[in-house]
Picture 1: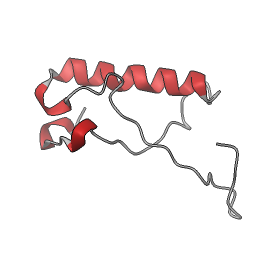
Picture 2: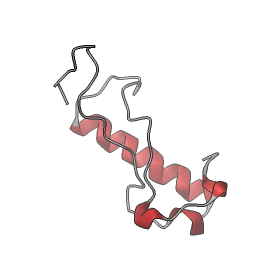
Picture 3: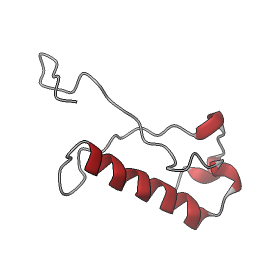
Length: 74
C-alpha cells in the first residue's frame, strides 16, 4: 500500500466489497449498507488508514459479479 507512482499516487488500488460476500442484489438495502460499512472498518484497521476513512478505495466489486442498478445508491 505504501508504494507510490512518480505522481505520488498508490500503485495498488484495492476495491471494496461486501464483507460477508453477500449476493448484494438480493439482500435488504440496510443489510447492503452494513456490509459495506463493515468492510470499510476492517479495511481501515488492516491498512492503518486515515481516521476519516478518506483513503478507503473508491471502487466496489460485487461478489459473484452480481449487479443490479438498485445497489448503486447504497
